[in-house]
Amino acid sequence: MSKQTAVDYLVKELGDILDARFIKPMQDLLIVNAVNKAKKLEREQMIDFADNYVDNCVIPNENMAIPTIMDVPNYYEQTYGGNNESN
Image 1 (cartoon, rainbow, N blue to C red):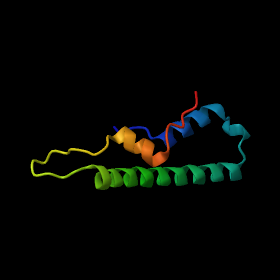
Image 2: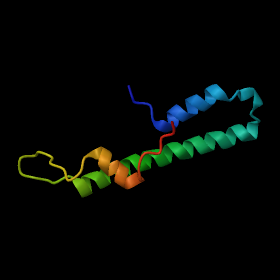
Image 3: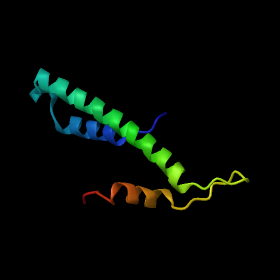
Image 4: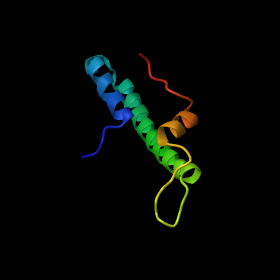
């Protein structure tokens, strides 16, 4: 079973809020295209983040252990500029 992405969550939440009867066909197509683009961008962003973390923070060694310069949450904060959650 795959995990739900942030884009999938947002689509579900907005779907619960918006009533499809009030969306015109052209708006529906624009929404689908925007969601698909957001999913593609999210995937690329996650892959880039993982690659960059390994390149910049993981120190290879002979024992196959993975000591790091910085933990993942701190690297995320450094990369994306902090916590943008609304309360």
